[in-house]
Length: 498
Image (cartoon, rainbow, N blue to C red; front, side, top):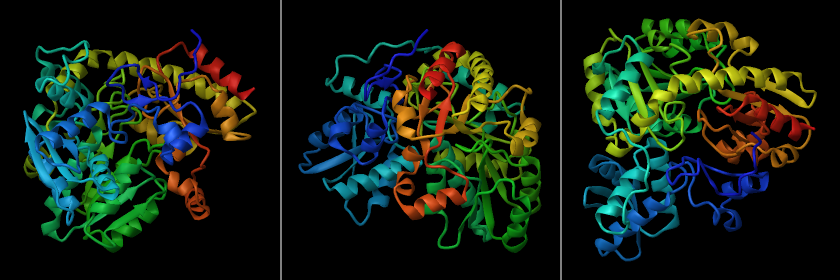
């Protein structure tokens, strides 16, 4: 096959519920970040936690209209509890909780700042209503004729998904496996559960271990107890420094959150040593293995709670937001953590569950295919004279740590980060691969990740200095290798590098 350039704003995949969208040039990436109308008018949707989907917009308008709230806007949310939490977050701005035909939302005065604050909270917590939940609402109230057709597994969908989770997180049983409406909501629920468990013990400090995904960092920055209760220890290879921190403040630390490997530097810590340190000090270790998939690496024995975005690899068509939490069997405080996580998680929408169940059977073959192709792409990139750096799961500093967790020596995941010599836009604009956020799809995806995740840092001198201190180049590209013929992926890269 040969890749064809995708137009600006096209959903990836080309489905009404697609979680990514095409940003084919650096101008479109910058315009998206700066909310340039010439760019944003083409974006009918995007990653759902960042771009309000047309179904959510229509459902919000319907809720406001039916409540008679002129000059108000609204965000549809996943539950009554999420509505109450969002209302509290917006205070002192007066929010109003709405419910109609099974859909919850929060209305507020139509002010740009208030809308942005609501969006930010929902982005961090993953508590917004799903695109299918709002689509079904619009059908119920007669504003849509019918849901868009798609393949669903309606018979025992939860049983099918839980069977996968039992394989991925063996030997955890159903009692220790929890479904979430998104990977971000799984992280949020685990964070809240541990915070509430540890606070009565005088433990309010949270440690970020490694450079993590932006919303995970934001949760720690914004929702830890107070000034001094968030510690960013971004060097995953500095175990001595982490031990020094624990020696000084171990009695104050509630939890540590890390990714294995980290996103986008693909670094893996000595997880067994980190877990032993946490156990010795009564600290809960939360680990996110989403970058490579829990089918590629087995982290549960070296963690207390594992959080995972099932949007990646498991929903490999790229059209479902979903997540999961797993508790390590034998975990101290398991009973309380089970209760608290169940309480904090947002409910999953039945049709999202049925759609995930319809494609979850492909997960093992997707993981196997994408990681085999990723290895070949790494070989190509490392040998090309125009490629300056290549980061992957087996990069030298991480190799030994990663292989201790890998289910097989070739279980490397689909993600590669790299930089090229010369102007970023010249390479990116010329490249014919699909370009957009997300990863772990059957579709190959590439994006200038730092521009999309940390645009505020990319566009300031101090921000660029901050990135450099943490080993991040603004020009870093994150590539998620898909299931297309690997020769076609390499040919597209070779052409853009010529």
